[in-house]
Amino acid sequence: MGWFKRLKDGIQTATRNKMEAPEGLWYKCKRCKETTTMKELRDNYFKCPSCNYHVRIGSRDYFHLIFDGQYKLMFDELRSVDALNFVDLKPYPERLEAAVKKTGLTDAISVAVGKVARKPLVIAAMDFSFIGGSMGSVVGERIAKAIDYCIEKRIPLMIISKSGGARMMESAYSLMQMAKTSAKLTQLAKAGIPYFSFLTDPTTGGVSASFAMLGDINFAEPEALIGFAGPRVIKETIKKDLPEGFQRSEFVLEHGFLDFIIDRKDLKERVGDLLAMFQSTTKKEKAQSS
Amino acid sequence: MIFLDFEEPLEKLFEQLDKLKEVEEEGIVDVSETIKELEAKINSTRKEIYGNLTGWQRVLLSRHPERPYTLYYINQMCSKFIELHGDRTFSDDKAIVGGIGTMGGQTVVFVGHQKGVNTKMRQYRNFGMANPEGYRKALRLMKLAERFDLPVVTLIDTMGAFPGIEAEERGQAEAIARNMFEMAQLRVPIICVIIGEGASGGAIGIGLGDKVFMLENTWYSVISPESCSSILWRSWDQKELAAEALKLTAPDMLKMGLIDEIINEPLGGAHTAPEEMAKILKRHLKKTITALSAIPKDELIDRRINKYASMGVYEEQQEAVEEKNSKKGTKK
Ligand SMILES: [Zn+2]
Image 1 (cartoon, rainbow over the protein chains, first blue to last red):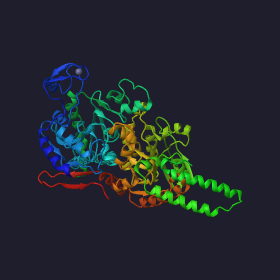
Image 2: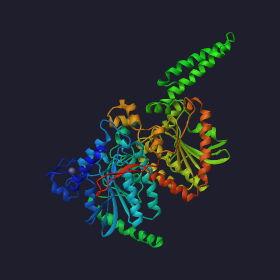
Image 3: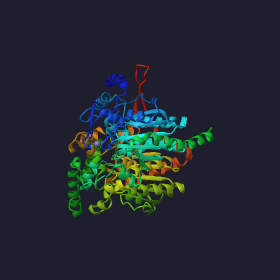
């Protein structure tokens, strides 16, 4: 494939570990329009110091926020291919290439293993900046491999969802990733390994309707858009305005589909607590199975 | 009979046939030879039209207003059928039906999307677009099947899960995800058949099974061609292009290894000979139930999960080695 070589070049630039968080010296809040310095924003877990708006960040930012320090990327060798010769306004390979260049990432999810409060954890984190965080074959396969790894090593799994849904350019292959990830999660459940699903802004479509809603614990960032259908589609279908706060984390919590909402500054501590509380279960299973 | 645009040559031939039959009824002139010739012509014209259908034409056929729907098939295939209602939590969704039936002496649990047969019924059935309680009713019936060791047949025909305020409030995403999670481990055979439209999460929410079949003139995709056109082309007018790009036909899906078999329809489509279509479907289901029932339960589930785990196309890039290693995850 012609784009493959160029794609490789793109990956080499990826070693910069570019983050999705905004760059520059100043940050103007999308919501309250207050301006703060970038350093202030960074020190405040990428939240607006004035109104606590959670700025959208990427997989590497979450790895830095949650892991104790070092972490190891896994399954980064998997690459999307254009199996269907999909062309809309642009050929799919061009979209992929542009996404790789823009983000320095290799696809819309990154998997890493590290430690949180000295306990091992595998995190699979999505990047919205990579084709809208869409789920294609690579996203599905990386999650499947992460699950196999977690079962083998008996390490809990956390998935950080941030996606508009399935990747249309992979058509039915992307649809089947919903079935694939859901089916693989049953193996994790049977092995007695906890799965923490962390939903961030946005989590919709095929991602919310598969692994994101299947956590042993489902939790979300404040005010994240979480739902099956996008608000625009719903509005067009029912021809009515949507209620205030519709499909936001607080709404989803109120309707019973989240366990809790967590402020980003408390995220690491909460994940550490969860790991500690579920640790005995994971170990006990280990003793039985060995 | 309702003819689609691309069936125009057929429509004219059928008009001629009707006239000839009137003449025949008068009994004055013998037109039997001419009728035979015309019928042969209709047959060959059908073969010609149906041998070269585009993706979009298959989409139109899958939506043909005279096409048989889930309850028709169930009632044709079963000597007895008892419809079972409700999710036991919220309500009874009308867009997904289900129940227990006797098909060729075998008790089977059926679940399927149901579209309405006329304007009033189409609204009553919400155009086959289910709310979460529909998916939860389906799951309740599948769990019932598991408890009594009965095979499950799901019939899929939906434009998608309903995008509404209440659907979101009651967890449309969770309902679909939960069904796939539970279906992956259900300890009875599951056979899924796309009988019309297979759109996205709304379809796969009752679509994870040991065997997945598509009737010949149906489609199955991550998104409808119309919605795909509006999102990727930013216009509603590119639905034909989108239908081609999405590779949503049964032959495409078989080639991709994402379904197990295509079930041929009578020439001219399922709606031209619904009884025959039901017979063909029943034959396939019976054969498949027998084959799947012989597989030990643990093996059945392992095979099911491995089938889905192998779906997807990607490459593995070796950091050290320059050349690429192409890997196709799908089975052929
Ligand atoms: Zn602010």
